[in-house]
Length: 162
Image 1 (tube, rainbow, N blue to C red):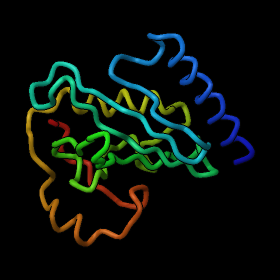
Image 2 (cartoon, rainbow, N blue to C red):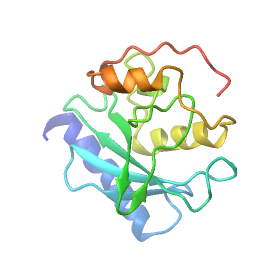
Image 3 (cartoon, helix red, strand yellow):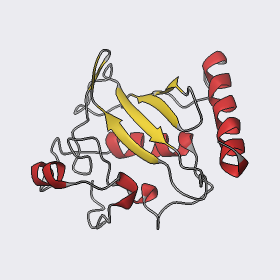
Image 4 (cartoon, rainbow, N blue to C red):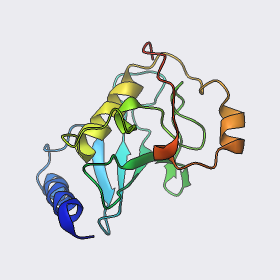
């Protein structure tokens, strides 16, 4: 991956790798799992102080970057894994296939000032403030019928209470 996208991702990766070596640079509950190339990264999250999410349970995020990053938002989804076990968190804005309805990840809500860390913090905050252990309305139908990439879905952001 060349150009602006590659340079920006190399800079973010260097910061994240340094954070792994020098504890405390990445915010608590956020850790880099893998970044074997500049197209896909995986991060683990824990959710502090919310009884809906056990404090020792980790959730895996997959970031997929286009060559237009940081001008274009990365695709970010939760991953369901058996080893190590990673579930899709219950939340009214997270579908059971891992797709996240968050304005920050939308074409209109994204800004190049955001980065992997700020996206992780936003998702962690969204989970920490959640009061409902439920899926979005229409989850089963959406998961069954959706064929669009997450960045191509036109979500309607109408529920600021969760």
